Length: 144
Image (cartoon, rainbow, N blue to C red):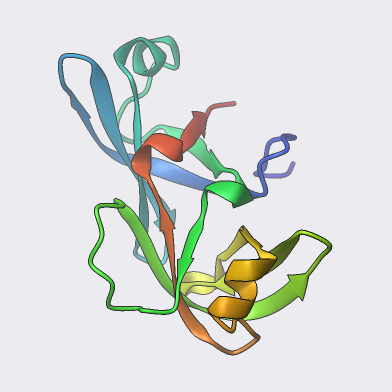
C-alpha cells in the first residue's frame, strides 16, 4: 500500500506527529518526515479534533507546488516556518510557468511551480543550491 494519498497536491510527505500545540483558534502540528526533517502545519482546532490528532499519529503532510517559494539565497531570513535547503535536480520551463524539483536532505523531493520570469531572473537550473519555503498555514494534514 502506498504512503501517499490521491490528490492534486504534488508534495506529499508521510510522517509521524511529534508535537501538537493548541491555541485559542489554531493548532500547530510538528510532523517528523524522516531523516531529521520536520514540517510544521497550522490548522484549525476543529480540524485537529476531527482528525483526532495526537503525538505519534501517522499522517500525510501535503502542499501544492504553487505554494512553494524558491530562493537562491540559502541564508535568507524569513517568517516561513518550513525551510528546506536543497539542490535542484530538475528545472523545466513551460509556456507560462516552470517546474522545479528540489532534493532536500534525506532524499525527499519538493516540487515547486514558479513563473518563467522568476525562472529566468533567478537563473534556476539543475545542480543549483536553493531554499524551498512553505508557510505552515499552507500545509494540509491527511490521515488514513
